[in-house]
Length: 147
Image (tube, rainbow, N blue to C red; front, side, top):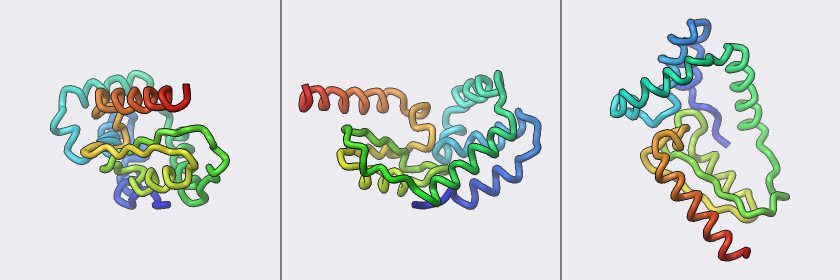
């Protein structure tokens, strides 16, 4: 697996200790594909405002990051998951590199992999209609093959 990119880690570390609004403004763009916040400024500001309604404490961010690093380093045995599984990953994910989504899909015995072009870590916020369509299609296909 591939670790969190160094550039992302550095940005998070540089913003650590800032007030929640500054921390979010400096780090939240990394959750999107490069350029998305600038291309969708009103939507980005709405999402930022929603996030700041209930700011996540710094210790929670640190614990989540540590868990992510541990998971990416150690991996997880998914070979016993026999259920059909849909793995969706944004090609331009700046937090969990896309190679990890590909590896997960390869490791699952019955996976369908959907890589979304021009999407980052929060692909569901960037392209909600496409994600809904992808999930619906997977579920419909699943229903047809496993009535």
